[in-house]
Amino acid sequence: MIEREQHKSRISARRWWQAAFALLLCTVLVLEAAPQLSASALYILTDGIATVATGTERVSADRILLVGAQEGETDVVLEADRKVTIHQGDNLFYATSREAETVSELLQREGIEVGPLEMVRVDLSGEDIRLNIAANFTYYETVQEAAAYTTLYTTDYTLPKGEQRVTTPGVNGTQDVTYEVVYADGAFVSRQAVAESNNTATAEVVSTGTLVKTAQEGDTIDRVIRNEDGSGYLILKSGDSLHFTHTMDVKCTAYTANVGKVGTITATGTTVHTGVVAVDRSVIPLGSTMFITTANGDFTYGMGYAEDTGVRGKVVDLYMNTYNECIQFGRRSSVVYFLDQ
Image (tube, rainbow, N blue to C red):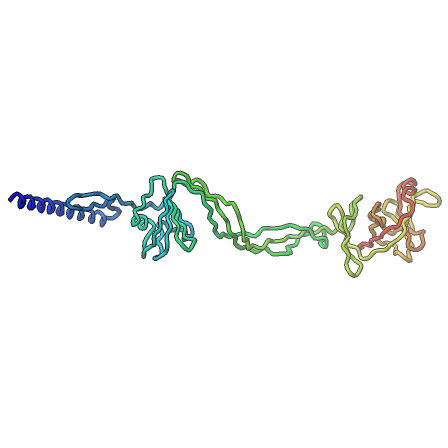
């Protein structure tokens, strides 16, 4: 009789717990159905005893960092049947994504809690999905961005000095920009570009001319550019350039006014000055414009104008201001570059 009463009592208690659980379950279902509401715990009835298993809540969008996803996505929907690796501190978890499952739902299903300062970094760039849960992140992401062409400036010894010409048009392109992204204690700290690569833009090249008719006083030759026809360009140390039509190897001497029979008026009627040279008009036509330097380059006379006569053959007599300068110069092997008139 006592055993029958105890049995009835156990049945009655179990029915009470079942009724209470059914009421609680209905309450949970109602809460889950309500917009923006969810149950934070699951109540389980076992042998008449109610226990509580804590569940994870949905991670807010501002705590999910997406790498390799489309811009504007927040809690991204994962592809089904992809392997998922989850790192949280020293813990490592493995899972497989389900159809139309979000990151938050996957974490909830796996029972993984995300702390109040932690964030979830979702890397979709590889074959497997990688989730990393931590409070501090420093990672690098590379994105393709538009790249405007740059302009490069160079010189052109064939263009008149100061004249500019676009020799290569600029074309815009793209480039890969790598950013360093830093989060600390669950908050964004910085995002800055640290590297650029694969720039497809074509630089615009603008050439500025250096070609002059007359060299500056004291300017010397830096290098000579020769063409097959004997013409070419003198690139001067000042940066200027001179065009010559041909050259001649000559012997150079020097003269000055009021020494011997030399006066101050040239054969062409001009007054003698530095730059006037005497020539054999049958070898070098009067009126020729030249740039004259010694063959070994140790002396540069510079600009010379064939305005006087009095020598024979391939000889050029250079006017100098003093007799002492003439004595110091003596007679030297030289090169005459004939310039454009």
